[in-house]
Image 1 (cartoon, rainbow, N blue to C red):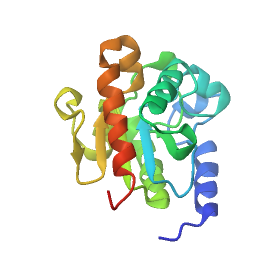
Image 2: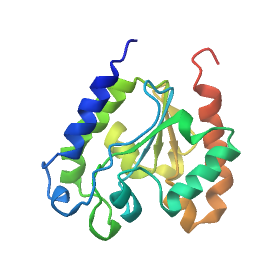
Image 3: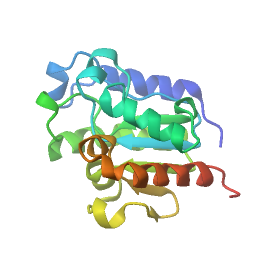
Length: 184
């Protein structure tokens, strides 16, 4: 599939100037996402945190450092995956995004998926799984591939809160490495 890089740049511009919900009023920077385009692997989190809001880059805080370590253990390079979130602006006090915020922002994520056309999309946590697939239950879904392309796993922030989840998280990311090539 041919992907015009200007499509992604245009979408990033729309995200960075978006005013669809009140989150845009308090943000420092929107966080569209980053990585290769086209992308074989896409990681989707919940929402930017404080560090992401300041830099405009996804997963650069504590959860991002944990994600980087887990990717490395799984044999993946951060530069090989496109990383984004459901919500593109930081919710106040890093609270969970509200339904109306997710609803206002979801089309940006779906457009990213359409433009990048990744082979596998890793939905990290309940918010990402709910926003894309309309289902919840990370405890039951974790480690499963749904609809042939959506791998469900923990959000890195959950792994930060419970380090006992790290081995399962890395195991899930190893599945990304194997499934990123359509012939595997």
